[in-house]
Image (tube, rainbow, N blue to C red; front, side, top):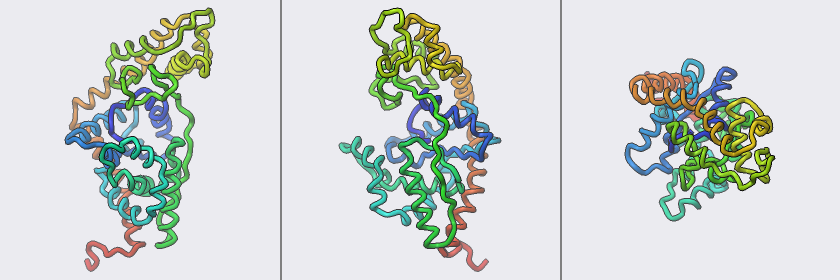
Length: 328
């Protein structure tokens, strides 16, 4: 995950909560990909602060450093080293067909578009292949990246011998689909023009309640105004889905408890706070103890490097690169 801003409710209910639940079922690696964030970060010190904040959030939501491997990408230099090998393995044509590059470059057409934005699928391939990953949990917008990773691994293996495990893209159990509180037809996003529609995990309780109380619904005042109908009542459906996601019920069951929007908004905000309050407090505790946070990240980097260095050494040997100490 890129450290490009605060984590919001959509990130948590849509993906991060599943990471926590799944960490005991597989050998999970969760990288904070700060090198990828260089394609959009252009101010000094911002990236470091964001990286610390995201690391604290990973631990605050419940990722266990004794179970999962949580690390910062730039702390594992094998990522950059294998990234260059992958750049030499994928083709210009393959990179030019990546839809995310086209979309992101179009949004930044008046700004500087770095070569790193074009080649970052090669680094992303390295991120995956370094850990002999069998499965890569993805959303639909990332499927193309796993495909180019597989193609690069197949090409490398054909040229130099069996080196990399071919990863499979897997779609994890669907998390909640959280929409903007101000535009319930669009996903909640930190890139929205206004923060009013986006609930951040670090928001204070008053800010969270204010956002929910001002959530967009509709003008229906009939006896069945509160009903679950995403097509006809997207604002109400969004509140019902959020409430259901944090209380463990279905949206329809939540709807049965309400006749007025005001009460639904307040109760949904309070239900969300019951989940977010301990996360926010733990996040603050970790940021107030940078030494402990740095220690946890060193543990993760050491675990990651143990695997990554072996994979990189295997790739170097199969290519036939001269070892650093060939005659020792």
